[in-house]
Image (cartoon, rainbow, N blue to C red; front, side, top):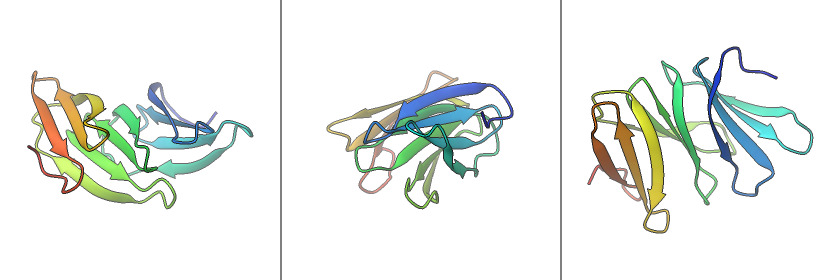
Amino acid sequence: RGHTDSVTSLAVGPNEDELISGSYDKTIRIWNLISGECTKILKEHTSWITALLSHRNGNIMSASSDKNIKIWDRESGKCIKTLDGHTSFISSLLLSNQDEELISGDGNGEIRLWNLNNYECK
């Protein structure tokens, strides 16, 4: 327990010993699957979380109805980059090209392809 509203998305951490959850409460929580404890709370989105991914390098990617994607350093819990440009809530995220690219889709039917080396929309 920990979120104060509905859980909207889930992802498994890179070592499969963590669960990452996003919620209508605008937060992302990292849970230790062995102890069941919440180990970190990530809070920079201004609206509910709509999608989550865990990158093999340990970073977490989150999308929100605030029209932004955030890249988080899992260890520190700090947001290291915000990707913007969508004009509607982001409804889905997908990693491709051996995790070098991020694909995002939004409520207006737009799909964006992001280069994760320079964080530019291709």
